[in-house]
Length: 167
Length: 167
DNA sequence: TCATCCTGGTTGAGGGTTCAACAACGCCCG
DNA sequence: CGGGCGTTGTTGAACCCTCAACCAGGATGA
Image (tube, rainbow over all chains, first blue to last red; front, side, top):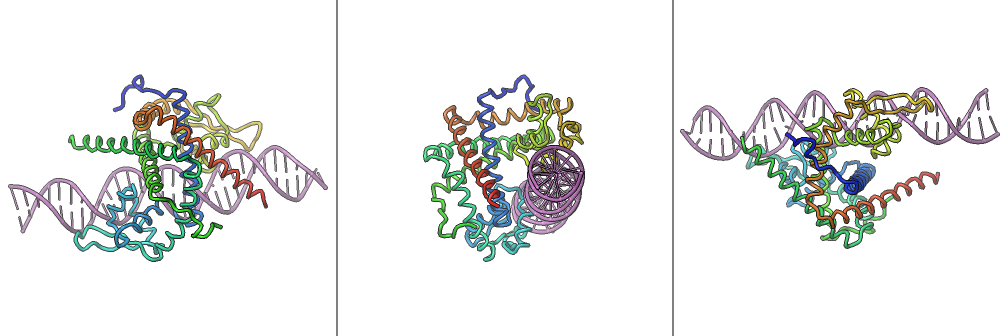
C-alpha cells in the first residue's frame, strides 16, 4: 500500500522545526477558539459554523447535504449536530416537498439571536489572536499558503475518487 | 464580560476571505492526516504524538505531566490516552520512586515498532500536502506566522494566569 | 506535629465525531 | 411497470475529549 520505509523522504531538522511550530500554533489556536465559544455561548466551533452557514443562506435555510458541504462536515456529523441544535430551539428541520428524501435545516429567530451574541466574542478572539499578531504582508502570505494547501488536498480527493472509479 | 456589540471590530470582506481560506485549509489538512493515521495505523494523531514524544525522550520514558506538556494535552486527556495505549501494549506505566504521586509512561518495543511503521505514512502525507505544495519562501513565512500566533496565545495564557492570581 | 495548601494523576459523566449499516426515495432502462 | 443503482439522510455503537470532582502524596509554616 505504502512505499517501502527506505522510500520515505524524512523531514530535515529545519523542516521538523517548521512542522512543529505550525502544528503547535494551529492546535493552540483552534483549541483557544473552541474553548472561548464553548464557554461564552455553549457550543463548539463546528456548531457555530452551522449557524453561520444558515444565516447567510437565502431564507436562512439549506438542504442538509449542502449544509454539510459548506461546513466541511460529514452527513452523519451534521445529522447529529442538527439534532442537538434543534433540541436547543436554534434550528428547525423541514421536509423538502420536491425531493421527499431531502430535508431542510432552517435557522430560527432564537438561533439567529444566539448567533449574533456568539459572533461578537468569536470574531474578537479571531482578530486578537490572528489578525492582530500578523502584518498585512504575512496575512497575504497566509492566504496564499492556505489556498495552496487546500488545492493540494482537493486534488487528493479527486485522486481518491478516481481510484474508486477504477472498480 | 465582553465589550458591547458595538465595540466589536468585525472582519472586512477581505479579512473574511483570508479567515475562511485559512480555516478550510487547516480543517481539511488535519482531518486528512488524522484519517490517514487512523486508517493505516489504528490511532489518531494525538496518540501518535504521544509515541513520538516518548521515543525522543531519554530511556523512552517521561513523567505524565511532562508528557502532557510536550503533547499540548490536558492531564485528563493524556491519562485516558495512555490507558488505551497501555491496553494495546504500546506503552507501560511505571511508578516514580522519588515522588510517589508521580507516574512514568514508557514506550515498549512493540510501541516503538508501531511508531516506526506509522511514521512512514504520516511523514509522507505531511510532505505531500504541506512541504511539496509550498515554496521555500512560503515555508519560511509559515514558520514566522506560526511563531507569531503561538506567541500571541502564550501571552494570553500568561494573562489568564495573572487574572487567576488576582484573587 | 498537624493543618493547610498545592501538585500529580485518575475517574466518570456528558457530549462530539466516526464508521458502518440502514431506510427511504429518485432515477434509469429494459 | 419493475428491478437495479445511486443519493439523501438517519441511527447506534465505539471511540475520543472535556470538565469537574476526587484521591493521594509533597511542601509549607505556625
